Image (cartoon, rainbow, N blue to C red; front, side, top):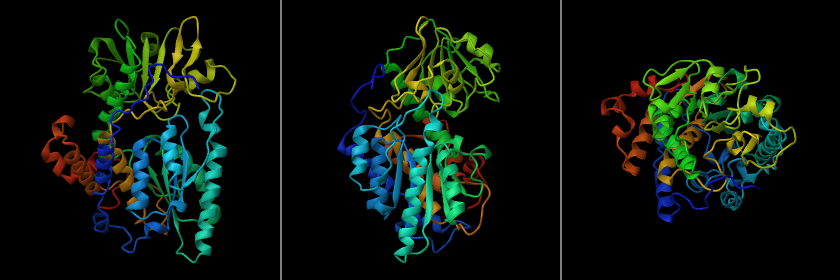
Amino acid sequence: MRKVEGEQQCSVDDTTKSKERLKDLLLTADIDLIFGLKNVQKQHLPLDQCILLMQAHCLPSFVILLQVLIKNFGFKSENIVLVPKPYSTISSSFAELAKLNIHLISNPVSYRPGLYDNSQTPVLKRACDSVVDIFHNNRKLGRRRPRIIVVDDGGLLTKMWDGYRKKYDIPTVSVQHTASGIGPQRGAQGIPKVDVARSAAKRIFEAPIISTSVGRKVRSMGLDFKGRTVGIVGLGAIGENLAKSLEMSRDSLIGLELPTFNKHSHVKNVYYSAAEFLNKCDVIFGCSGKNWSAGLKKPRISGKRFISCSSRDVEFKHLLENYAADEERSNFAQIILNEDNETTVCNSGFPINFDRNREWETFDEMGLTRLLILYGILISSFIDTNDRYNDTLMLPAVLQKRMVGDWLQFTNKDLTQFKLSHDDFSNLDFWLSESGGRNFFE
């Protein structure tokens, strides 16, 4: 595999002490808090009888999360099926996961640029087949009817599993931790979804961390933005924080807003026309989670550099489909759309901070991300799957407040870093108003 420019082998914070701190933080997760919520089963299904079906970035901090789930919360290794995302998997982390004796589904990807999702269909089918086998084996052993907890990143896995759920009548809850997995376009409307993606904890506290890690990676690449116009697509939580972390003059930044304008944006000049925006930019960061250029006919891309901060390769899907070579690829190095004019899509259009060599966040920074997934999994074991919730359920405000408070204390961070007052932080109504999904538990 060809190296991506600027790759480094070292870790930001790869020490035994910091790993232990992350484990200690995850162990603050309080299952007793969940018992006090409304609409939860008081006799929840024991965690050793839950089956985890996961698609994830195999990074060092994710390894620690799985270790804690198995060793400290009682999930059985044989009840965990994991599909690694090949564009982000770090080989040493994959090796550590293999030692846990979980079901690791090999993912030898071969795809045409812009069509990565299509390549995942057979892999996800294999994972779902494995889960059905595990489910039936558990039943043969006389165990209570297990439930499946789908831990998803993008919605593809939940949509695939929905057909199996219906065919075999298997109780299922889904944990969605990216916004692209929320909404009718992802199907699977019969599965209750725990909305981690649009929680206040994720949007307000995690977004600056992701933007900071993107900034670290970009600076390591030695890119010179001096005298160039840098565009940011999508001025939401990630895009807005990225604009600040780039440490550029506001006059050198422009934005494309989809669909509403962030009135408090750090970006001074905001466009609403994708074609006009594209013509103005030399470098474009995609932070929208959408195929934003899909409606453009023969967009002008000569000499431009495209950098994604979004899930999968969705940001530049239209450009890749129309300009990239048609042959299949098996690596994720940058794609050159036009050699004469040096038009490039970095990291094959996948998130720039997933370079398969290191995790660009420290373990302290990743603590909140892992707590969000952990709490999402835990509450999924309490949801009554006999009721068919045809909607998305808000991550409970009391859990969000607790996990963020624990994370801030462990990392010695202060609310002022996130421009949040103590009054707002203490007020559950604030967490409710800033989170997506239906308020089902409070």
